[in-house]
Amino acid sequence: MEGMDMRNIETFAVIGGDLRSAYLAGLLAADGYKVITSGFDGTDLPPCVTGCTNPAQAVTLADCVILPLPVTTDGTTVNAPFSRIRIPLDQVLNGLVQDQFLVGGKISEVVRKEAECRGLTISDYLQREELAVMNAVPTAEGAIQLAMEELPITIDGSKCLVTGYGRVGRTLSKRLISLGAHVTVAARKFADLAWAKAAGGDTLEIDNLAEAGDFDVIFNTVPVLLFGRDILKEMDKETLLIDLASRPGGVDFNTAAELQIKTIWALSLPGRVAPKTAGAIIKKTILNMVKEGAR
Figure 1 (cartoon, rainbow, N blue to C red):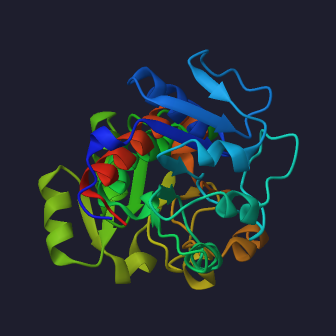
Figure 2 (figure 1 turned 180 degrees about the horizontal axis):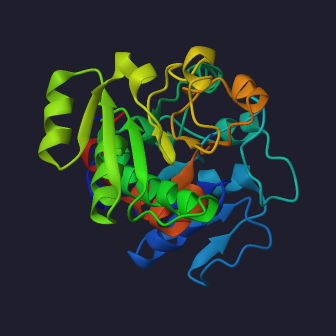
């Protein structure tokens, strides 16, 4: 569906999800849209949001149906941690028609095929660049929060290593430097190293991690195994290692545990530390998708 007119979208159905989805529903209602939810039993939603106990019925009433992030964790039911009952994915999809706008987060191939066999097209808001950019801020702040909770020292004056200089690495490095940390950035691209240096950090080619020296905390943002046994065995045992990378991550956690190195795999930080902000980011992204008619 191309160039969908925003005026044609009046009603959203938010089916399942965690606190991000709950806030998303409230924020859409605050913008003046009619919002129907299902799968939020016992959740404190605004009175302007209409709850529906039957998800299959809820989707029939909406112009745009929003599935959670991730859509499913088991391949058969909608990810709905607040729901008292299981919500079968096929029940939701069977209630949809082709001209409805259908979106979800972290859509698996199984979900995509289930939609396609019903003549439906589902778009993934997690794949949108603007969402990734906006999510870098709560991810960086959440990472710093974790470090502050776990370290016996202040961020000010601490020695920090950030591996990777993409969206999260840049945002995180900037905030650490502003807090007075001594930041070293390890990256592969020479342009990234130049930008990191210009931003006030020290730099290190990522292939030279073994020569990096000791740090109080290491933040990894690269979803490739960087911290294997050879690197980990050279690390100071007092170093805190926070992995921000998506699966499969960048740390050999079994070896780290064997060597008694404290590690935290901090997945999905925006939803954990700032669910309202994360919900607002998802809302903005979905409205952008509707404007573009992204399918």
